[in-house]
Length: 110
Length: 110
DNA sequence: AATACATGTAATAAATTTATTACACATGAT
DNA sequence: ATCATGTGTAATAAATTTATTACATGTATT
Image 1 (spheres, chains in turn cyan, green, red, brown):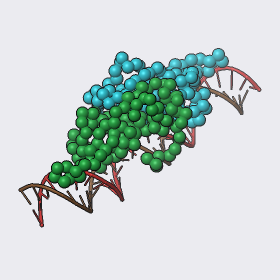
Image 2: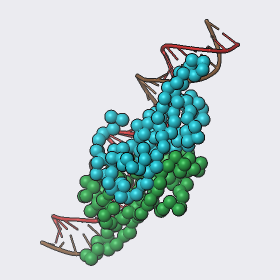
Image 3: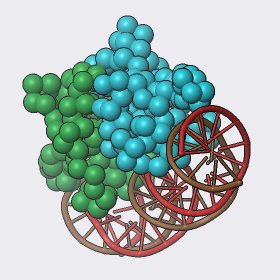
Image 4: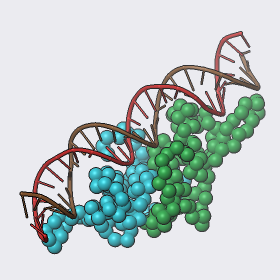
């Protein structure tokens, strides 16, 4: 996810939507240091797991985080989330270009 | 509005919130060409004026557009909106920095 | 005076997002 | 067996955002 791969309109929109929430920005800032498993992240971000899941899914669909399941030393299933690297320049030109390929659809396939 | 003036958390959040809507991205792409007055913009963006006002206010609060009132040659009041220039690099580091100054508040003072 | 534009906003409805509650299951330690 | 920890999700409620409807005002033209 870097600026060579230019996003289409819907992808850019998903990116902005994912960033348009204070809790998700906080999640990003926590994950910037190191990957975390869900329960751990829930504690640090001070929110319930169900709510955290919802936020993580938005971030994931936008390509901002990824996850991998692992087994801990004692056999527990651990779901780790980590930050994807990204670096976008947001300019009017970028938005104008992306706007061409936005599909105005009702929200369900999200 | 350029990257030398680093935004605080709330400002960055307002920026993302303003961009997290397909109609507002379209408005931006229309204004990128030249300034428009409200009724004109409403026709081009294919939306009602009341709705357009709502979108414009979000964009304005985020510093993405500005407006100026003028009198047309025939004496009508015309409210023109134009795009502010902006150029931000969105990276995990930027978000991490901004997250420090986000105030988690209920939405009313918007 | 009626028509055609323009601005502006209040009240309401509809849709979406955000948040909570209550569950389910599994493993390891006490 | 019970507790503490982990995962996962369905159902619901609350809050916010988005959209519509119905108005108000004003100027210039027909």
